[in-house]
Image (tube, rainbow, N blue to C red; front, side, top):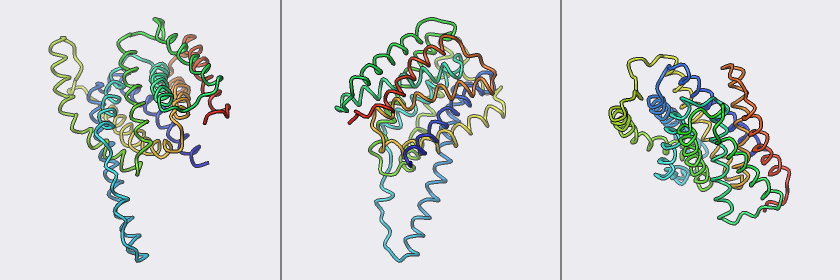
Length: 304
């Protein structure tokens, strides 16, 4: 029951991230680079406050019951690999969503996540049944179908960036299986990612000068864009990713991969209801093909 609750809450947070990002970028309320920077910063601040409160509470509780404080509870510091993966995921995610609809972007993202995590699970010798192997092949076919030029895929570059984002998120999720404290691991990963902010700004300005395109437009950022970036960072990312790291140790890599493929459906539905985005035939077919893998993996009991 615990793993179901954690997983469901995390999936809702993932879908909300897609929606917040699309809402902010679709109307030009903020640019993708600024959105990423504010998102990472707000998540780091939010988690920093929560971690400080948690540390105070744990020390206070230990003193109240008269027991020595176990410093091992505070030993989790995250990792640089996880932080780098997080930064790559966040930037590519935001830049890609400038041109992708909510559902399409989420479907590409989590298809790439699935391939990454299932591939790692196979490498680590997580046994798959014959039905699960078939589902894996079908999922790849659905992913390839979605990537083909169509009305639902307006930009090959955006699709490639979202795929890179998915691979980075897959690596970040895999890293969560070994963390001691999900909250502290997520918090320190976001804090470390702040070191990339100056690099992102410099890279963005250099790129737009060389390519003669405008990526960063600080003079026209609206308060709505800032609030959406902050909400995406503090709530959907900071708290949502902490919950996901709580679920990861309870799931196999292959299970975690296919479960996340429910997110595109949630994101697409939110896009239809809130942003009035259309659901294309290509998206419906790809969703049906790829999400069938979720049903197979959940119902099949031969995964050891």
